[in-house]
Image (cartoon, rainbow, N blue to C red; front, side):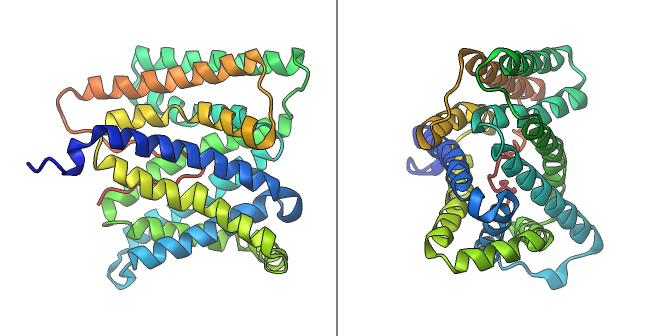
Amino acid sequence: MNSQEPRQQPALGVLLVVGSCLSLPFGAAVATTIFPALGSWGVTALRVLIAAIVVLVIARPRLNRWNRAQWTAAVLFGISLAAMNGSFYAAIDRIPIGPAVAIEFLGPLVLAAVLTRRLADAVWVGVALVGMALLGVDGLLGAAALDPLGVLFALIAAAFWVMYIRMSTRVGALTTGTEGLAVALAVAAVLLLPFGVPAAITAVADPHLLGLAALTALLSSVIPYILELAALRRLPQRIFGILLSLEPVFATLAGLLVLGQQASPLRLAAVALVVIASIGVTAGARRRRGSGPDEEPPSPLTGSIPVVPD
């Protein structure tokens, strides 16, 4: 095997995943700066539209060959993308990014426990729930309580993350390359159109807003997609999934550096528990599969374009 093949570059693969984990929350942080002008759902619509155009140009799906099952899966995938991303942006419009990402991670954690029905996974979910309890205590005792509506939107995003994981797997099995992803993003863009039209009109009239919207799409969709795809060619997917589990940490960092969102000790402890639980579930999945091939891990629903198997 050639020493330059991607699989022989694990260090580069780690750097690529870290780059994706940094890009996603910083993209979300940039998005929050234009919420007052465009609204959280308007920003979501513009971001998804720009991402859809980019991926459609890259994938150039041959839709005339699609059957009913492929269309159904892609449409459901698109619904999950629209609802998940819209709910998450509505959440970070009301609560700090770090806690929002931590709450959203409950979706895949609970799904893992339900699908495996193993005591170990249930324990990891329990660890994450303790983290959520700490967020609740911090909300009662801390200087700045979390907005209940923001928490609700984060929980809704977590629920749609579950749908996203299931449908991305289904689309990956039924379509080739990134065709399914391209169609799903197009569906999501159409669903978000009622929010996107007013936001687009406002953004076009203000080049600064339009530039920030494009930067959001670049940081939250295009760059993570490219980096994750390249990383998956260089890393075992188990390691890839564990590295993605660090995203709440990077989200907390982005909130601090870009938006000045301070994190209390309780909130930091809550984020740490969710990260530990996510790593535990991901590492346990590999042990359950034994020597079999790795499965495709879900990309973060907080905004990354999912990586669909070629």
